[in-house]
Image (cartoon, rainbow, N blue to C red; front, side, top):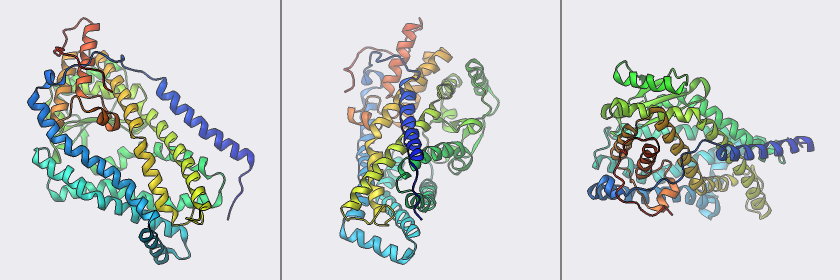
Length: 435
């Protein structure tokens, strides 16, 4: 049954969507920042020519694989929705699973399409994540463990789409005028909910986390926590070593589920004062409200996507490609559009993330006042991942969510100069600003 939303309700929903968009922009503009553009340092002087050659031998094919995976994500649903064979496949699935239940049929089409995208991309992902990682000595798990991890990442997405698709289409059917702002705002609520429960539901599927044990590392960490004056009762160690040698750390959750997780590979190779720098960086994300800012930005993305989807489906209906937004044949077109929007937004997402990470770096330096430990940590993180300290401009623009190591070391040198400390790196050569 179709429900006509009154004008006051429609006005309120559209106004709320605009408020979310404005709030997301304001949250990113009015936020703590690192000093702008400290003098860039020469990556070869910092890391050596041999290291850079090894990095580029490792990274160059991975960049091509990542581009290919992005292409697959858009091309498969576009082919499915626009080609005659793809449309016939949709018709067969709809007839088999929901001749008189179009919402169920649409859910089957959506899940089948996502599984198909993942299977087409699987050889590329397998080469990058299993074969090459083994060749370079990063991988510590076998084929069975790797496939399990792949399923752990992908299966919740399939399940979520199976549950959400009929719900979304029911809303679209009942509220044909109000659904774009309503679903856009609901996407923001869902993002917040997922962020809240992920540490409790999803992360345990990926990592087994235990409290940071007593010792010198914990003493350093507790000192940083006391200086930050941030109540933290969950600093955990995750067993990342069962799948990789790479070192990392992250902060996740909202409110009562917020926690800092250190990889056990980080504890195995970093000095206590360097680990304290990492914790200070993660605490800075908490102080700056970066997770909440990210949730708000995700909500804004949901609003933009919903309105773009409504416009595209109206055009497709007017052109006769589908009979309406709830037509199962519209599912591949909707998936293609959403994945295209996600891909096109990658530069914006990366730029926002880099600003947040640079601000957290500066806050970590302010909190620990130890630029030497900060510099040592950045070198260790870069070398443990074979990260490119000075990547090509297009890679940096497209998907570098953190500043490259050369920029982070330059930030440490800038902080040291401003605060009368010994410069922890050798800034012998500067390079041109990044395009």
